[in-house]
Amino acid sequence: MGVQDLIITPFYFFILLIAAYMIRPYVTNQDTKPYFIPGLFVKFIGAIALGLIYQFYYGGGDTFTFHTHGSRWIWQAFMDNPGIGLKLFFTEAGDYNGQSYKYISRIWQFRDSSSWFVIKLTAFFDLITFGTYGATALFFSSFSFLGSWALYLAFYKLRPNLKKHIALAVLFIPSVIFWGSGILKDTITFGALGLITYLLFELTIHKKSTFIHIVSLVFFSWIILSIKIYILLCFLIAASAFMIFQYTSFIKKPVIKIMAMPLIGVVFGGAGFFALQKVSQEDSRYALNNIAQTAAVTAYDIRAGWGARLGDTSSYNLGTLDGSLTSFISLAPKGIVVTLFRPFLWEAQNPLMLLAALESLMVTLLTLNVIFTIKIRKIFDFIQTPIGIFCLTFTLIFAFAVGVSTSNFGTLMRYKIPVMPFFLTSLIFLLGNKK
Image (tube, rainbow, N blue to C red; front, side, top):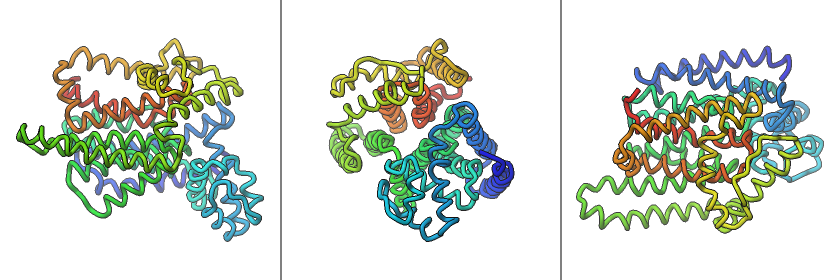
């Protein structure tokens, strides 16, 4: 970030805000209107804050890898020779060639396909922001907000009386605002996750089965698949469970429901399994027989690999993870707890971890409030609803996978942002109108 940001970033800040005011009447009503502009505004602040923290606190990091040491060189190629710049957009990760070698040789993550996808997306926005980090980050945060708003509407339509509480749970979580707004993989995947959730509900609950809905669902799923495949795997499992309960709930007669449930389970369970198999073929590391080994390798890389080299002291250890499926599953309870409720206050070792610990404390207190004030029967009734099973399944599977395979609080705070709106919205639904 430099002098250029002081001129171009404010310009796009106001342009995007004006565009938001123009769009707002078409995507809000009297209930939701008060949260639209504030929700976008905090995303903008989060995007700028993330860039400043990475530059002046960390002295570098992923966001600069994607921009300064990534998309900036594609933008430079366009400035030197538009033909070469355009060619870079269609170049596969790791595919070096003569004409563009002097540019791609300077791109740190060129050989990693998911990072290259994000770098090309960043470069697309760089073309209209003149390679300005802050302005490009605002476009990333706008996409993230689009997904957040879609997710908010998806939950709001189910419980309009909880509009304010759902807004807090989806739009205004501090960690999601910060880690889900800048030039990062997490910003794009979070936005896409919110959109596919909204589209899933529109297709199934509200029965708006249009060509645009289906194509959009496939497109945003492909975006997640291209960046972080495990998010899509968790979503597919939760979506399969959701559709089984959703279509079973349409049957009112108990006898017919009992008879139909196995058939519905086979249909949607089989479809979900087939989708999982197809998705895992894109990356063999996430196939069922390899996923435990992948988690072990990832945890080691984060804790003992680059984390140790950088002198990072925010690591945690949940126990032995030897690459076997047994050891992987045995750590599930600890993985879920560390994702949803840690770091604890006494584990905070720097200002950012302290803020994360305070947020985790608030989530813990809200969870305890549900446990001790809501009747067990009401909790079980909610879990048996389609939305309850969807949120619970996604929360548990995602929290388990991320918690076990991360082993570093700093990384965990970033990786866990997709699950937080689903978990907190579940608690909000259970609490209802309780203060």
